[in-house]
Amino acid sequence: MAEKIPVLPTTSNSARASQCEGAGDDQERDAPFVSFVVPVRNEERHIRACLESLIAQRYPSDRFEIVAVDGRSTDRTRAIIDEVAAEHEGVELRLLDNPARSVAPGRNLGIRAARGEVIAFVEGHACLDEDFLRTAADCLARTGAQCLGRYVEQLIPEDSALQRATGLARKSWLARNPHSGRFAEQEEGWISPLGVATVYRSDVFGQFGTYDEGLTTNEDVELNYRLERAGLRAWRSPKLRYRLHPRGTLGGLFAQMYRYGMGKRRFIRLHPGGSRAAYLAPTLLCASAVSALAVLPLAGWLAGLLAVPSALYLGLAGGTAVRSLRHGARTAALVPLVMVTMVVGFGLGYGIEMAGDVGRRFGLHGGRDPGGREARPRPGMSLLQHVPSPADDRPES
Image (tube, rainbow, N blue to C red; front, side, top):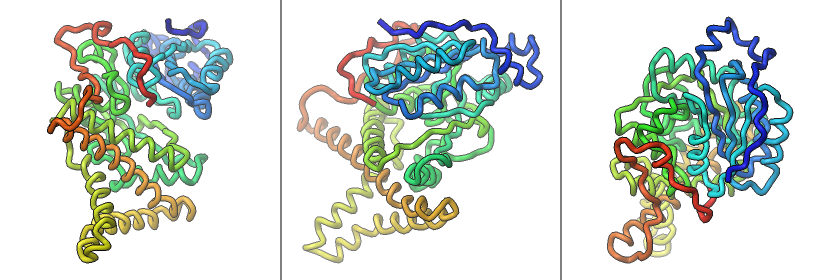
């Protein structure tokens, strides 16, 4: 049974609504009702700032709700959500329980609970600009888009030097998925939803299905790939700015990228047509470095040849660090270390999962396919039919 915070009255918060420039009664009535869905687990450090950035939107307070979906947090995340709900009258904030703990079931629970004609997904360690909703509503009205893409900013001044270095690395093509535009500032316009879409008209999920709960990462990529295959495009605006705090330790960053690498390979297992050469590049880079070390005692010339890709990457990473000096010497010095951590983590995760695929192909691996079931709804399948029931033994995200 989903747990629920007592719903506060949804009467208009006049103090904030009055901030909306030129927002008359007709304009407020015409504003689409938006549901923020916030799947979280152990986000006590950032959840307050996240929720307060949603509450502070320059948008009629009776035209949006916040649905927080908690994956059995073991810290103070739930208590903080309770506190925020009690402190902000006039905003509807509900808390649902996600016994599966991972992100995809949390997103699906939020979809089922959402009342909005538009659904916007927000991570618990993210903050939105105060005009995010107004910009989203304007983009949807002007373009007729079914989904919107956002620009993710990870270079946040108050973060640690390591986190800022991660933000700088994300801006570089050396540590960014070239098929995703979320970390690159681009002009407003149409773009593939893959990697960027985060705001959707709610009927998208009824028509194309929801998130595959067999995936513990890349569930958003998998859904957006299905939308892309169906011919949907996302409207992307740099004004849809989304500040996302990176991992605070190298170990946390490595684990995140390792999971991403495994998740990307599992996504490709479901959708072979979604494979890209760029996904394999980190694994090949890791393989060349390991091979160079392995043959060094036997053939120095061959080791040197195998080490060329790694040396080239390190040189380019060093160039990125030099260009980052204006953000501080300590931050710049960490950029190459962050980039190597990201590449090795992703490369190992992807490579190990790919090796498992090869083993299964030649009958060397028994047991069930760990990639999860494919989330492809049959035509006419309803939302409630498509959403699988959460399972208690799902791994954490």
